Length: 361
Image (tube, rainbow, N blue to C red; front, side, top):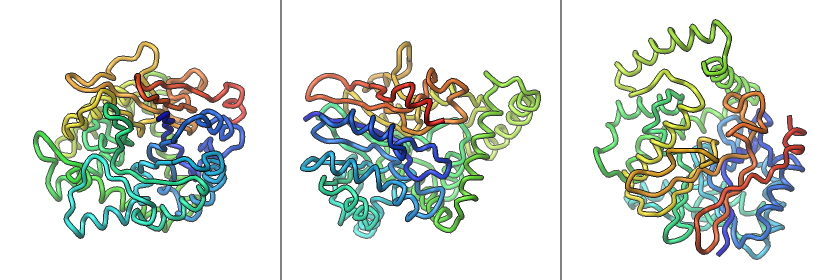
């Protein structure tokens, strides 16, 4: 079976950086996956943290409807991530009530996943929709998951990681050694539920302001590119003191080195930790979440010691804080499709033409 994997569309973001909402990038994406037997949307298809879910669905509708028409008689699989975990809310609630153990893969029809999944399935007709969580075996040797469990190990003090640290202080940490998806859900699930609930009561302007604040902070704290004195003082003096305080409080360990390269390194190490903790026995593990595709030419760190090779499937959003001024040459360049044949390793391809990308600015 020929599979195309795409991650992190974030359809409905209030920043308007979701490229698949625009006709030209959407056409490029749909053309690139047209010859696949199935397409896997590897998490964060919908942006449910910046405003009401109805608004996100309306923003996603053109893409979903065009994908559905293009894949008539074929299958679309969504593997939800942290920004759209509500797609499988009913499935997760049912597992909690019955005490069922959540394994590496649970595949369900939209009716069993929840009302939001049923709405998405309506948009995708005449294509069929399945949902898989927390991951999906694409082949016997290839496993795919969004990658959000890595936030439990990430050393960058992002908001979700801080929140996960607080939850662990309240309910207890992950077990030492091997863990289960249920262990990660116990830590991260409350964070996702709170973020979603807050978004449903917020105005688009408030969601936009919060996102812009995060972007401004990242731009100022990337000391590898900033010449601003305030940024150097913030990153070199103030931030280390704050991070030291977080670590003393038991919320870490975190690092004060907030650069794009450190985020890449920490993200890969954290994903490797997840793979080992969950006991994922595969040759390749696909994930998204960090928006940094790879391995790109010259990249290191994608091989888990004694384990699989990691492949990050990138994103379809315009990164502001991490991509820098030249998005076309940035490692965070959007527009990636991962192709998987019946045999052979996964292949990454950026299918977004430079001219099209420039017109999205």
